[in-house]
Structure formats: C-alpha cells, structure tokens
Length: 306
Image 1 (cartoon, rainbow, N blue to C red):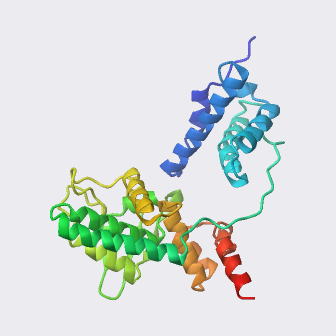
Image 2 (image 1 turned 120 degrees about the vertical axis):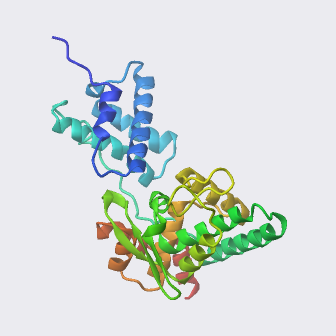
Image 3 (image 1 turned 60 degrees about the horizontal axis):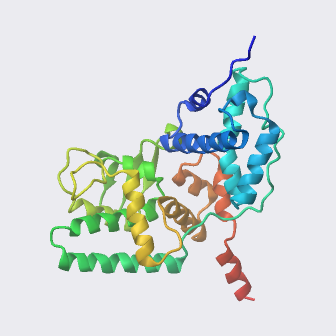
C-alpha cells in the first residue's frame, strides 16, 4: 500500500495553536512556505513532509548561512518554524522520526538587540518637532496627522509596547491624570494582560493626541485621520516609522526598535531585570537578560574611559 503524503496545507495546519499572537503565526507560516518552496526547487517535486531528510535540512541551513549570508540568530529564527512543525508531526505520529532533531544549532556570540542611542533619539525628536512646527504653519487641515504620528512615536519609545499591543489599545484602557497614568494591555503575548505605567513623556504624547483625535466609530486609541476614521493598522504604524527613519537619517527604525530602546533606556537608568521583564510582558526572565548585553557603543565608551 502506497504511503500517504503530507501536503504543505496539512503541514501549515499544525500552526493552529491557541494563544499564539497572529503576527507569530503569520511569520511562522511565511518562513515555512519559504522552506517548502526552496525544497521543491531543489528536489523538483511536490512538497511532502514525510520526504524531508536530515540532509535536506542541513542543506537548507547552509543555504541560509552561506548563500543568503544571514546572521546566526536569523538562521535559527528561520529554522524555528520547522522545528515546531516536525515536533507536532511526530507527536501526532504523522512521522516516526524527527529529521531536524540531529541538526546542530549554530553557536553564536550573544549580541544586544538593536536600539537607538541617546544621540539618535535626540536627532529623531528634533526631526519630529521640526516637522510638526512646519505642519502647523503650512497644513491647517492635515497637521493633526502629523500630531498623531509624533505622539505615536513618543508613546512607543516610552511604553515599550509591541506594535500589535499598541494598535489594540482602547480609550477605556487608559487612565490619565496630571501627575500619573497607566494603561491596560489586554492582548499581550500569550493573551496575558498587564498594566504599564505612563511616564511624563508618554502622558504628554497621549494628551496632545487626544486633544486633536477626530470623532470615530471605533474606540481604538490610534485611528486614521484623513482617510476614514478606523483603527490604525500595524502596517500603517510601520510606514509612519519608516518615514521618520528617512527624515532622521537612521539606519533602522521600527516598532520593535522602539521596544528595544525602551528596554535599553530602563537598563541604563538602573532598572532591575524583574521590573523590565514585567513592563515588557516577558514570561521568562532569560528573554529580558539579553538587554544587559553590552552594545558596540557601550564597549566603545568603556574603552574611551581608559
């Protein structure tokens, strides 16, 4: 009797895991599809999970590291969706052996997450302030969009929220007063809720946005201004930050870099790992520990002090 194959569609169905953030599932599906396409091109046949060998996986690892030139951390990130699929397939007894089990993990030197230096943060704030001043003079009907964008960046840098968490914040989740404030993150990673205190910069950013936020059918905090009045999407947030990246001449700037910058600022000010983990919504303290890894800039400053 001919052995039944396991198609790509069947394999992707294994990602239906409760509690996963939609962005995590999306990334895993994308990366696994990339692997499947690569496998089909190399083997010149239709994808079948049962036919994947440990040799195929070693070749793919070499391809990511050699031909694409990905860093070690990026290679491991690309392999994580494969490890999950094979683990689940083995658990369901779709396969009798896990071909990725013998694939050695590439050893690498731990590096600090990319964040903005103090100088880059200052340059970014100058650009944002200047753009807003120009918008108030030249664009009497559009300046509210610039205010939203400016407030959004300040908010992300001072709360450390993930982009999906920021987009899901509702007006009722925010408590603001003159001297303090906090917000409730309802849809954190793993569907966990947490309270995040709002410092002076975050409160000021929110107050300036709420003062000009147009009436909307949605109670989402961040909304569109010029086209409709619906909730701001994650893609829109990424485009806003990409624009500021160009204006400020930054090498990279994204919602996740805002999150890393928030964490690095906390560490630099002496906040303990437990507090940083709580603010970021990390379940495991080891996830937060990477922020105490010195950056190249930190090492350069240390040497300069000799």
